[in-house]
Image 1 (spheres, rainbow, N blue to C red):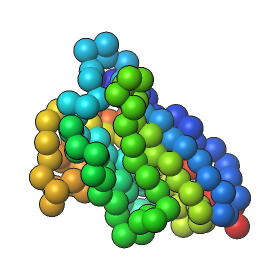
Image 2 (image 1 turned 135 degrees about the vertical axis):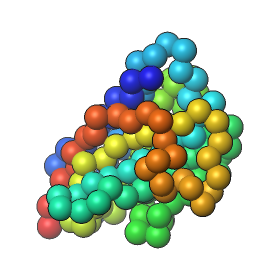
Image 3 (image 1 turned 45 degrees about the horizontal axis):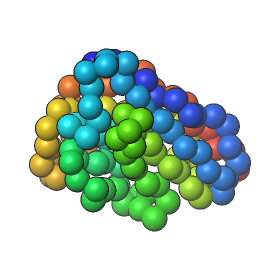
Length: 128
């Protein structure tokens, strides 16, 4: 499964962006996968941001983005989104989408090793 993340760019603090993640594999059905958005800032480790488990609508978000970021899934378009509002300079990073077929336990959603497939990343830069 090849994932493609897009939608990054340059935005001023307080602005919004929506990232998209789509799979190139025609056999990929997004509702069958647990999806995670991760980010990696320069010189820092990759960290989990927002997660959506397969067949569920409840989302899990890191404390740093709660109330600002929303992960969602469009089954008809086979696409997962990350809506990012009230962006701050500390949100600057390369954002990656990741997927694993089936369910991931909540305590493991933020673990890189929980995911089998990764997109190439899209750069988000927030200016002050």
